[in-house]
Image (cartoon, rainbow, N blue to C red; front, side, top):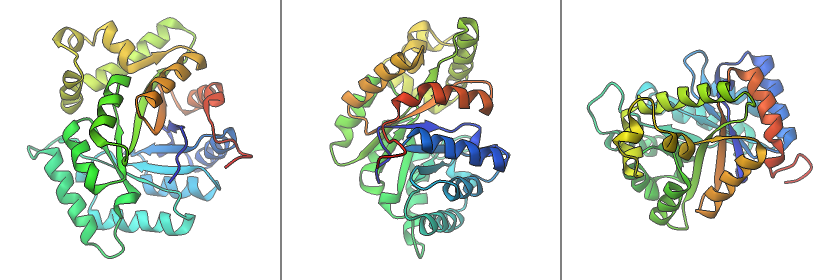
Length: 285
C-alpha cells in the first residue's frame, strides 16, 4: 500500500461533525496528501469516521490509529476493519497501539497476544494491513514478523535512522512529526510546550526519549530547548520540508505531519500552508 511520502495526522477529524469531516477529507485529497491518519477520539467512533472519510474520497489512504488495544475487542476491530477494506478497495491501514496505561502487563506482551487473537479470527486483519504504533524498540522488534511495519510516535531523524537499521529494508517505517507553523512566536511556543508536556506525562514516551539519548536535564521542568527542537519543528513549510527530508534520508517511507494548533478550523489553514509538501497530486497517482 502506497501512502506517499507525506500524510497528515488528523487530530480533530476523529471527533468532527460529519459534514465538516467530509469537507476536510475531500480538501486533503485534492491537495495531494497521500494519507490521513485518524487518531481515536473519545467523542466519536474512529471506524465510523474513517468510513465517512473513505466514502467521500477516491484515492487518499485512511488509517484509523487506535489509542490502545485494551479498549477494543479484537473481534470487533477485525470486523470493522474488514468492512472498511472490502468497501473501499484496500485504502485503509490499521494502526494498533498498546500504551500500558492502567495495567501492569507489558505493552509488548499485550500486543503480541492481541495479534494472536487477530490472526485466529475468520477474515483476519492480515500482517500487511496493520502497523504497530510504537514508542519502544521492543515493539518494533515485534512488528518485524507480525505487521507491515511501524509508526514511531516520537522520532528524531537519528531515531528514524536507528529504527530503519533495526527493521532492515523490508519493513514499512512511518514517523509522526509534530510541527508548529503559527507565525506568532509566543503562541507557537505555548503549543509546542503543551505537546512536550503530553509526551513527558507518558511513561513509555519518556522511556523512549531516554533511549534516544535525552537526559534528565532534557526531560524535567517541561522539557529542554534541545528536546523541543529535536521533536518539534517550528517554522514555515521550508523548515518542515527540511525535517521531512532528514527523516526520509534516514530511512522513513512516510512522514505524518501533526500540526499543533487550536482546533480543526486552524488545522485546515495550516494544512493548506503545508500542501506544497504533498507529493500525490489530485491529477496524479
